[in-house]
Amino acid sequence: MGIISVRMGEIRAAAAPDQLQTVLGSCVGLALFDRQAGVAGLAHIMLPDADRAEPPQPGKFAASALPALIALLVRGGAARGRLQAKIAGGAAMFKTRPGCEALLDIGLRNTRRVKELLKAEGITVLAEHCGGGKGRKILLDPATGLMTVEVMGLEKEEL
Image (cartoon, rainbow, N blue to C red; front, top):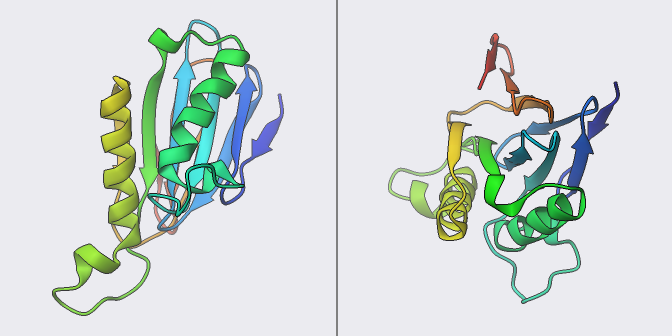
Protein backbone atom coordinates (compact mmCIF):
# COMPACT_ATOMS: atom_id res chain seq x y z
CA MET A 1 0.00 0.00 0.00
CA GLY A 2 1.30 3.44 -0.92
CA ILE A 3 0.28 6.90 0.19
CA ILE A 4 0.03 9.44 -2.60
CA SER A 5 0.40 13.07 -1.52
CA VAL A 6 -1.73 15.73 -3.21
CA ARG A 7 -0.17 19.19 -3.14
CA MET A 8 -1.87 22.58 -3.46
CA GLY A 9 -3.72 22.89 -6.74
CA GLU A 10 -3.22 19.24 -7.69
CA ILE A 11 -5.67 16.51 -8.64
CA ARG A 12 -4.67 12.90 -8.11
CA ALA A 13 -6.41 9.54 -8.34
CA ALA A 14 -5.65 6.19 -6.74
CA ALA A 15 -6.95 2.64 -6.70
CA ALA A 16 -7.04 0.38 -3.67
CA PRO A 17 -4.86 -0.45 -1.82
CA ASP A 18 -3.14 2.95 -2.35
CA GLN A 19 -4.42 5.97 -0.41
CA LEU A 20 -4.48 9.72 -1.00
CA GLN A 21 -3.50 12.39 1.51
CA THR A 22 -3.21 16.17 1.74
CA VAL A 23 -2.89 18.96 4.28
CA LEU A 24 -5.42 21.80 4.14
CA GLY A 25 -5.94 25.26 5.60
CA SER A 26 -8.39 27.53 3.78
CA CYS A 27 -8.16 25.19 0.78
CA VAL A 28 -10.82 22.51 0.32
CA GLY A 29 -10.05 18.86 -0.19
CA LEU A 30 -12.64 17.42 -2.56
CA ALA A 31 -12.76 13.63 -2.45
CA LEU A 32 -14.72 11.72 -5.07
CA PHE A 33 -14.92 7.94 -5.02
CA ASP A 34 -16.60 4.92 -6.52
CA ARG A 35 -16.56 2.20 -3.87
CA GLN A 36 -17.61 -0.50 -6.30
CA ALA A 37 -14.65 0.22 -8.60
CA GLY A 38 -12.28 0.81 -5.66
CA VAL A 39 -11.05 4.12 -7.10
CA ALA A 40 -10.96 7.62 -5.64
CA GLY A 41 -9.65 11.03 -6.47
CA LEU A 42 -8.68 14.06 -4.45
CA ALA A 43 -8.47 17.69 -5.52
CA HIS A 44 -6.67 20.28 -3.37
CA ILE A 45 -8.72 23.36 -4.28
CA MET A 46 -7.23 26.77 -3.51
CA LEU A 47 -9.81 29.21 -4.98
CA PRO A 48 -13.48 29.13 -6.04
CA ASP A 49 -13.12 30.26 -9.67
CA ALA A 50 -10.42 30.96 -12.24
CA ASP A 51 -10.12 34.19 -14.17
CA ARG A 52 -10.21 32.27 -17.48
CA ALA A 53 -12.15 29.38 -19.00
CA GLU A 54 -9.26 26.89 -19.12
CA PRO A 55 -6.71 27.62 -16.40
CA PRO A 56 -3.27 26.01 -16.75
CA GLN A 57 -3.69 24.30 -13.36
CA PRO A 58 -7.35 23.16 -13.21
CA GLY A 59 -7.00 21.60 -9.75
CA LYS A 60 -6.39 25.02 -8.25
CA PHE A 61 -9.97 26.19 -8.83
CA ALA A 62 -13.24 24.56 -7.76
CA ALA A 63 -14.99 25.28 -11.05
CA SER A 64 -12.31 23.52 -13.10
CA ALA A 65 -11.20 20.91 -10.56
CA LEU A 66 -14.53 19.09 -10.36
CA PRO A 67 -14.91 18.28 -14.07
CA ALA A 68 -11.23 17.38 -14.32
CA LEU A 69 -11.49 15.08 -11.30
CA ILE A 70 -14.63 13.39 -12.67
CA ALA A 71 -12.92 12.78 -16.02
CA LEU A 72 -9.79 11.38 -14.32
CA LEU A 73 -11.84 8.92 -12.26
CA VAL A 74 -13.97 7.77 -15.20
CA ARG A 75 -10.76 7.08 -17.17
CA GLY A 76 -9.58 5.08 -14.15
CA GLY A 77 -12.63 2.81 -14.12
CA ALA A 78 -15.18 4.72 -12.02
CA ALA A 79 -18.78 4.99 -13.14
CA ARG A 80 -19.98 8.60 -13.25
CA GLY A 81 -23.33 7.65 -11.71
CA ARG A 82 -21.72 5.95 -8.69
CA LEU A 83 -19.47 8.85 -7.68
CA GLN A 84 -19.94 10.17 -4.17
CA ALA A 85 -18.19 13.03 -2.39
CA LYS A 86 -16.70 14.04 0.92
CA ILE A 87 -15.15 17.43 1.58
CA ALA A 88 -12.86 18.87 4.22
CA GLY A 89 -10.93 22.05 4.89
CA GLY A 90 -12.14 25.57 4.25
CA ALA A 91 -10.78 26.91 7.53
CA ALA A 92 -10.72 30.63 8.32
CA MET A 93 -6.95 30.84 8.62
CA PHE A 94 -6.66 34.62 8.64
CA LYS A 95 -8.22 37.19 10.95
CA THR A 96 -10.64 39.59 9.26
CA ARG A 97 -12.34 42.77 10.38
CA PRO A 98 -15.92 42.39 11.62
CA GLY A 99 -18.34 42.66 8.72
CA CYS A 100 -15.77 41.52 6.14
CA GLU A 101 -15.86 37.80 6.89
CA ALA A 102 -17.99 36.74 3.90
CA LEU A 103 -15.83 38.67 1.44
CA LEU A 104 -12.41 37.80 2.83
CA ASP A 105 -12.97 34.29 4.21
CA ILE A 106 -11.56 32.28 1.31
CA GLY A 107 -12.17 29.02 3.17
CA LEU A 108 -15.90 29.73 3.40
CA ARG A 109 -16.04 30.84 -0.25
CA ASN A 110 -14.20 27.68 -1.36
CA THR A 111 -16.54 25.44 0.64
CA ARG A 112 -19.69 27.11 -0.70
CA ARG A 113 -18.48 26.92 -4.31
CA VAL A 114 -17.55 23.24 -4.07
CA LYS A 115 -21.00 22.41 -2.65
CA GLU A 116 -22.74 24.42 -5.39
CA LEU A 117 -20.81 22.60 -8.10
CA LEU A 118 -21.42 19.15 -6.61
CA LYS A 119 -25.14 19.87 -6.35
CA ALA A 120 -25.23 21.02 -9.99
CA GLU A 121 -23.48 17.77 -11.02
CA GLY A 122 -25.91 15.66 -8.98
CA ILE A 123 -23.13 14.22 -6.80
CA THR A 124 -24.10 13.48 -3.21
CA VAL A 125 -21.94 14.87 -0.41
CA LEU A 126 -21.87 12.06 2.15
CA ALA A 127 -19.87 13.97 4.76
CA GLU A 128 -18.01 17.18 5.36
CA HIS A 129 -15.56 18.53 7.90
CA CYS A 130 -15.20 22.21 7.05
CA GLY A 131 -14.71 25.58 8.70
CA GLY A 132 -13.15 26.42 12.03
CA GLY A 133 -9.80 28.09 12.35
CA LYS A 134 -7.30 25.22 12.17
CA GLY A 135 -5.69 23.25 9.41
CA ARG A 136 -6.44 19.61 8.70
CA LYS A 137 -4.67 16.56 7.37
CA ILE A 138 -6.83 14.10 5.46
CA LEU A 139 -6.29 10.53 4.32
CA LEU A 140 -8.64 8.93 1.78
CA ASP A 141 -9.07 5.18 1.26
CA PRO A 142 -10.32 4.36 -2.28
CA ALA A 143 -11.44 0.86 -1.25
CA THR A 144 -14.00 2.13 1.26
CA GLY A 145 -14.37 5.87 0.69
CA LEU A 146 -13.35 6.37 4.32
CA MET A 147 -11.74 9.76 4.89
CA THR A 148 -9.77 10.26 8.09
CA VAL A 149 -9.52 13.89 9.19
CA GLU A 150 -6.98 15.11 11.70
CA VAL A 151 -7.47 18.69 12.86
CA MET A 152 -4.08 20.06 13.82
CA GLY A 153 -3.69 19.72 17.58
CA LEU A 154 -6.84 17.58 18.00
CA GLU A 155 -7.81 13.94 17.61
CA LYS A 156 -8.51 12.16 14.32
CA GLU A 157 -12.07 11.71 13.08
CA GLU A 158 -13.42 9.30 10.47
CA LEU A 159 -16.03 10.37 7.91
